[in-house]
Image (cartoon, rainbow, N blue to C red; front, side, top):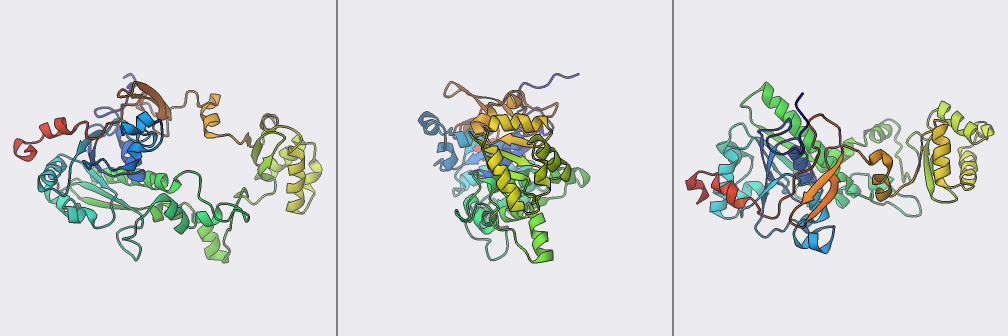
Length: 390
């Protein structure tokens, strides 16, 4: 048996041998291409000489931000190489086109039409690489009345309907606490690219232009709510901590210390919950509000750690509400394949960073470093034909 690799980089993993030109920035696109790098693809991150991708200076210590290796950047750029090119300059544009000749995939997340004006759109790339797998990620897709608008996660949370069901009456609509639309769209882009590679295997030589819309990616995840509205005319409003299953035996409850979340969604789970609490009479209470009020009073008697242990022992789905730091420090996460050591040699650091969100025999044991701005420009240009590199 071949031993598992210590790190997944170009030359290792199922995407080994594939070259990806990454013209993306901020979160959604770089997250997707970062996943490809963790699967073994050679990902060349094409950056503007000004280094104006704000995530390089976002999060982490001042030293990390100053070095252009902010926490947000490190979290999704492991193993990539970085080259700086000014695509408004004819020479650098020619260099990118020459790089495209050896690429399998090209990904961009500019507003529709920008790459065409820069001379590196789908048709221009296909002219030098006939079977290119070209992917465009945008807020709203290439067509329609919103196509030209700028799109950020916060805006998409608002326009997609997600914000309208997040929060409570007192708070009004609120954003989800992380840039969830960026990462949902990034995952959609990963799926599209892997499907495109499978299609290439079925139809070699066929060019493909994949279009991923952040709005489409987010709204399709709310399909159950959409079909409910389509068939009943009813909309879910501000959900707060209301359970998806609409049962009073589920929700978030304050405890003497901390809080607990419970999902006793089925009759059997509700029965086990009430038995564990010594309150089988709650099964007979008809009004959901009365049940919820009784549960709130019960859980205030002990701390959340007690209730988590007690209810879990009774086979009732329950967990203490934890911070991210507490979650990552939980024994369950100590050996998670989704979190690996990431060396940051420029700063003499080793950080625990996200890897692939699944276990695989070829998955990385450690992560390759993320690049500084333009770190690999000279060596990448040196590999180009001499006339292109000039």
